[in-house]
Image 1 (cartoon, rainbow, N blue to C red):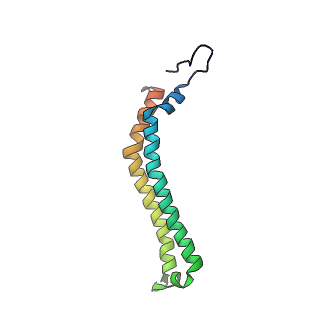
Image 2 (tube, rainbow, N blue to C red):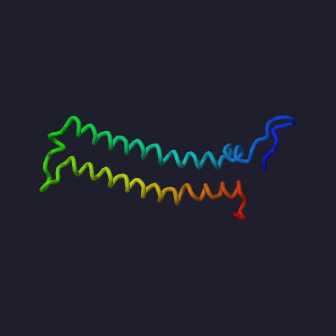
Image 3 (cartoon, helix red, strand yellow):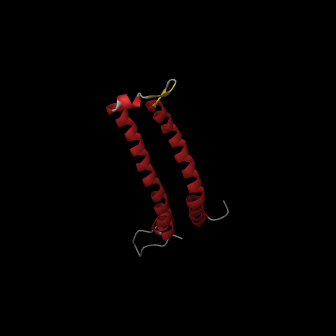
Length: 113
């Protein structure tokens, strides 16, 4: 699949051809459309937690029930949100990324793998 660029010129590898293909650009775009907004959302959520802990200790120490306060609840929700984001990403990747990546893999390696 690698065509030389011209007599005496550098040859374009199969990987470079795939990287330049519309299919690869679409796959990269799909990944970025998910990863960037989700990363920003999580970082804002985490930063809010840190800022609340630093600048609003009275609010964070507000008791909800027993020994549970707002700070502890938000801290636990940080872990929960990480697992939720991971689960959502896996479902998104299985549906939108993996099939396209598999098609590109077959294009590069052939179907006899």
